[in-house]
Amino acid sequence: MNHYNKTKKLTQGAMMLAIVGAMILIDRMIAYMFTELIVLLMPVVIIMYSTMHSLKDGVLLSVGMMIISFILGSLNYTYLIYVPVSIVTALIYSYGIRRNFDKRTLLFMGIATYVVGELIATFTIYPLLGIPLAQQLEEYKVAFNEMSSFAGMNYGEVLAAAGLDLSNLLFLIYIVSTIMMGAMEGLLIHLLSVFLLKRFKIRDLGNTSLWDIRPNPILAYLAMLGLFLLYFIKYLQPDSFLYNAAIILSILSAVVLMYYGYLFVMLFGVVVLHKNIGTFFILLSFFVPFLLMMLIVFGFLYGSGPLRNYLELKLHQQQTQAK
Image (tube, rainbow, N blue to C red; front, side, top):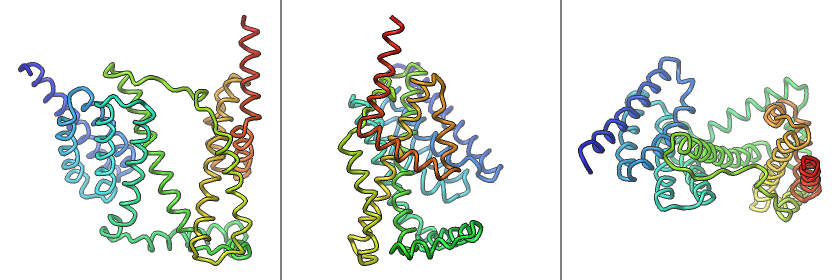
């Protein structure tokens, strides 16, 4: 390597470290309001740097980022937990890029690594930092009871009548939500990396359209069957393996169908209405529970075929008219 390239590499690495350090200092001054955003951007920076130079250079940059995040972040527990997870995800993702893996494999690597990191943090790192899982679940239980009082209903009694134990249900929901959160973080890292690598002309990993994500009818039917497991919960022994497995499968089934539902709503807005209503609908669904039920229905009909066929017919008609 000539002197110019070596100087350029060191300068780029120093600038990236300085920018990340400045962001952490600003985050500390505003009471750690943007910690999650910074932790999300750090692996993207490492991926870009590793792709421009080498995986070894990415490792050196990762070590520097970890040190400054721990020091400048005043040992904030979010930095202590999620910076290592993000860095390991970035290095594994960078390794995949260096080996010319296809984009689907890169996405799987990013999601799987972050999910495993989230689970390790939940059961090992959080307790070491004095935040045991039992304490977190108790706080969720208090919040759930307060929400019940505000709504004028005792949801605990409703769950008990359905054969569900609140504490056990909260634990299972917490585990599933941890997995889904890790998957979402891994997906965001992947999307940002693909976009920025192409935007800065570092490497083009190709584009993927939502239309290209074809639903799996078998998965849609299995997810719908998984939802009906909730009706058989009352006949199972609480805290048994089958009881816990049934709840987890039901939650995952609802997530799968809502995912297909989101896909349908976004594509429906573009193909039929020619408007981007998907983002608004998704945000609104967080505040209107009825819309989540609609998403599950839409998701099943889209995943099993009818609504996908409807969109394909509309798109074919539009292309025919355009000719």
